[in-house]
Figure 1 (cartoon, rainbow, N blue to C red):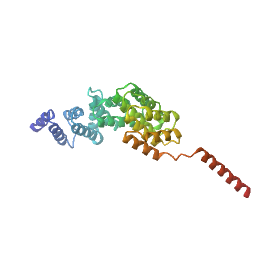
Figure 2 (figure 1 turned 30 degrees about the vertical axis):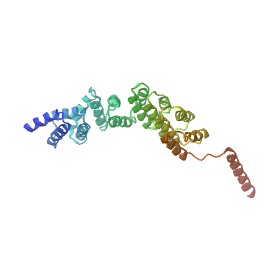
Figure 3 (figure 1 turned 90 degrees about the vertical axis):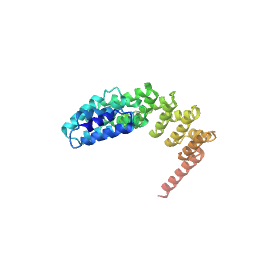
Figure 4 (figure 1 turned 180 degrees about the horizontal axis):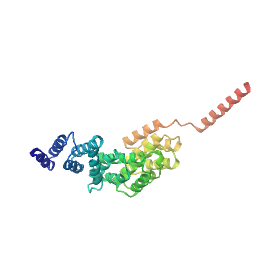
Length: 296
């Protein structure tokens, strides 16, 4: 009992190492049985710890109990996690949703806590929330609409994370290029960068997409966006002459990284075939077909 009280005191310590060690000792002491309610509460609370290692250990412990525990343990953990979905700390709510997402069952109540995860301070935590949302999209038809709205109206970080999710949704979600085209004019350069890179990964060759990327390549005030636009054009690898011409002109830019991006993009484009040569090639092919027909 004294050891347990000592561990409980260490959980409130300002030293992250002591908190992590105390939580580990309490979890170890509960091995082989249903973890006590106080330990479940402590793990849920530590999902919002300021130290990443403590958060991760708490999350892994709760996930292990939920996956491997007996019936009573799983029901108890599930209940604690569902309560945590409305926690005022978005880290607690998002982590609880991520654990529950692996458990199956109803997913609709997980969307809001995961969307709150877009506002977390650490990129790793935001990415984890986004990846979980993308997996849920297979069974949540309305999620794409929520993400489109967030891509327009959220904070800069939320807009960027929404674009990542929209990019990675299954094709059946029919997201299209519109959210990314709109984001190419976003006032935040990181959002514009995300939009350009997403269009490159999606590989859409529509005129609207190519024209928008060419404008970004030529006119965006940020060198970063111009570099990303060049890379995206190389990924899409269209055969349009104006794309090749614009990339060749970009090879004269002052920024060495922009020149490098343009050079790599040009290397991925199909070789340009002069129109006269193309007509000659087609005429020669037609003559060969006629000659074969006469010889029969």
